[in-house]
Image (cartoon, rainbow, N blue to C red; front, side):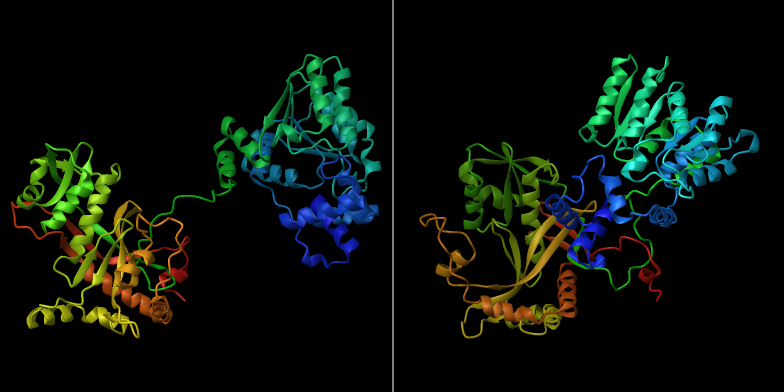
Length: 575
């Protein structure tokens, strides 16, 4: 209500249309607060008189204020917390409620909760406002609980307390009932700031009674720092009189009521009624869809699932210590069908045992059984499998692996100079679907520059949704001359300063134009082509049985898809 009043006044003063100001937007709230700080029309934010002053400024007439309250009350519905409070009242577990609210939500909720109980177990709520305070006095005198006392009036009352003058003094009889109740019961204050001095003063007057707050007072607030000075003063006064005073932190009425509901027992019908009122969590587990996927509007991902991957690799023990790059250089120079990774003090490898031991002979290698691979726990295992996966996707296929420290790629093969006719025929046949997907040459030379190019994918080995995936990102690879390649690819030579500004690739514009017309339909065809090419079993080195430990991967045929965050007939193909 305060936000609404301030926005209304702001628009009146600035001549802005009300529909253009969103009082819930933090930017508008800040702008409005800054305006009132400079104009001094209202007390500062958080001032106890802010509500009353703003209400009276917008609606000077008592009739207008009552009409406004009536219109706002008509929009309300009992919340989860109202269900809990109503269950406490209808079962007699809470004797009375005093409220400064005008709405009828507590009465409505209590009526609904009461109707769920057998008549013999039901307690009927008595409602008393400031124009019917004699009812409250009768309940007090006769112990006829439960009681709902509206100390600022009911939205249907002739008398309402909204303005500063009206809030200055409470009805004497209702005030006496509040003081007497606080001398009999514990008091829980929730959702109330203590802005109007008359209510706080009534609570102070309780301390004049012989028995005051026998069960203590519990003041619920979002943060102790938000307590008004008058409230702090009240709590200290209660403590000084020997009664208990507690500050309870809770973000809102629903949260507090949820805590109460967890420790108070009700009949099964009320328990069910309360549970049904709980707000559904925003983040919750969602069951996977069981119906067939449809083509749209779900998003498709360029990733294929790895159905199986190697569990063990060859364990190597070296008599002479070596750096991993030295071992890899030896494998490269000897053209060994193998790959290796450092695994603690030992090494793990895939490939031909004979070629491994021969290539690393100067380090005194020994094949010492196998070593288990856990890519989740060990980064070396992840790296070894990443290398092997890239090789396996190329072995026996018309692709070339390119392993780099910054990431691995797979290039479409353009063939070799000594390629015979039959081999060339098989390669072109294997690439026919790939070429059809791109709709143009998938290797050749860059126009006007002459640099060789190949369509390619960058490969990533990732875990998601409890499975391992081969993620592939299509791109066009251009082989630049050596003096340009080092700079373009972002790996400066050691003798050059790291701050050197690399020149852009001379083929960048050509690549950009090449990809500019590749819209969704062509993207989907390209993803189809690569996923079909990777499908099935892949072996990193194609070893014969007993010649070593090969890295064998089984790749699925279906790419990853997103799924809708909610179910709807639309996603079942129903239009």
